[in-house]
Image (cartoon, rainbow, N blue to C red; front, top):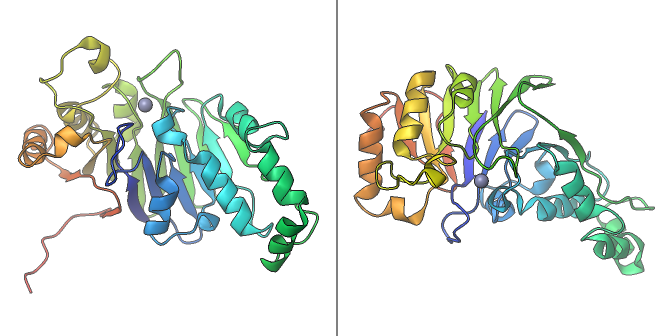
Length: 294
Ligand SMILES: [Zn+2]
């Protein structure tokens, strides 16, 4: 199993941090958790074609976690040329409605899909890529999931918990992936909550939102829906995870000295491994050993 951070940013546009998105490569499958702005580009940067993806999990439908969904499905469908299975998608309601609004006949991409499936030029390209007419439209297999559910697929399972973020407007979820190679928790966007601590109990890796510096921002409107560095450290400590990865990083947090201060202060609370996440970082799933000087 290999975990790669594709996008570690926030809604604020940055060239070096795409929106939330994390890739897990297993033996014969590739799973994507969230699909924020720039996720597909980062996927290519990581050397993975959208065609290789088998499953997508959406934590919540804030655009910085899902805006590349349409692009991912269309690109995967176009390049897959009818030779790959439909993408399996898991997310909170209304993921099905969002999917319909994007890909149905009268959806956002309805005219594009009509052209690509019916225009002779598009059919020509489709056949060159090995497709067999008539060409079907993309039809992601969407399952809307809720807290307490477990998704089981062969060698891996995914547990679902609800976290505290933008209710009642958005249902906000966290996922725990369990495989023979270890367990990874994708905390999504959340304020500190017991449900995430429970989901994370004993996990190898916890990806936790670090949107602010605790103490600098104390307005309850934000602290009741987002986490800072000490919140992440407390959850990691309480859950007894091995590695904490700070993600959902704002530009303010990565100034020289601030970044180091964040890790230092988090380490006063959590004694495990702490990683300040960056785009395209491969996250070690076990003990991190110092590399010999060469
Ligand atoms: Zn959010």
